[in-house]
Image 1: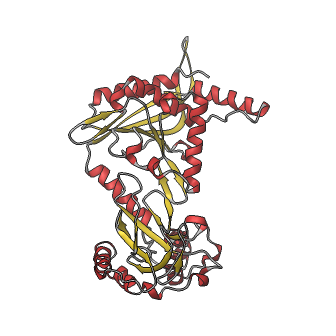
Image 2: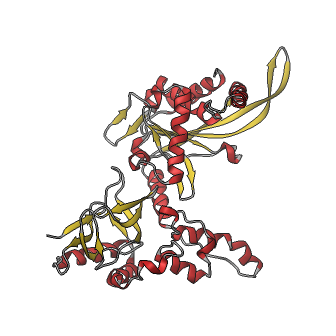
Length: 402
């Protein structure tokens, strides 16, 4: 009996995944454990292995198709074994809903795909190759952000965007940049967050002299002993946020329409910029860690995101109870972060600016202040408690000791 190949469900909030490349074609022999195809969610890329030995009897979705989770993607069985016709029909109808005519045509012609051997010299998906040819882009010199360094559509789109300035010099009025699949999913998620919640942002700033002194002490210790943990300013701020969340547990919560779920421990999410786009991994039970361990866990999660090896369960918005997004390194002085629903809040960390302030005894000078932008869901938290929580973060930063 033929074995169905199902699209995995990568976390509770993931409803669809996008197939980025097939490594096998209809009629190929496959062995259990071999990689059949690669796919991506809005945050990460994965490979799916064959669940059984046999022949790849049918492929129901082409590269580029957005496939609902737990839906049959392909069938593996004995050569010549019949495959239910309804499966293919259902596949075509599902693709129509997400990838109109082009995807349906691709389903019908999937058996005509080029053999994998033709793509050995450059690891690139067929859709990316077609886009590169259409835009006159040579993929040979591009960095592939897909699994195993493979070039995907997003890489070609980025390369096309980089040529916009050149196009302007050539007299072209404008240049269109197609949305990558990942960007489409991120856009959908961000729009849903703003559309389905009552978001409000409060801004405050904190004196960071003690944090900067601690950072300088850490740098000095590292020069003496390279084995010591390199604790960053962001690590310290996250530590302060956790302490504030312990005092204001209503901010350490999820708004779930008919109830508010308040967590006994802080599962801290933090934004990480990767070649594939923004990811927000969660460090579970962060409130039970000392500063050195927290720093190690934050770095480990960030590295895993950049390598594409992060546990998919940790990048779901429901994995974290609160999120920190730091744009200080980019010089951003003020911004409004968007909440990762169902979380009740997110803290935006801004750049450090020297401002005039009283140093005591009638003396004034310039003091380094860091901007803090708290966006909260007004359905879950009122303005008063949110302001007190933000002030607690400020106080934790200003009394920090290392």
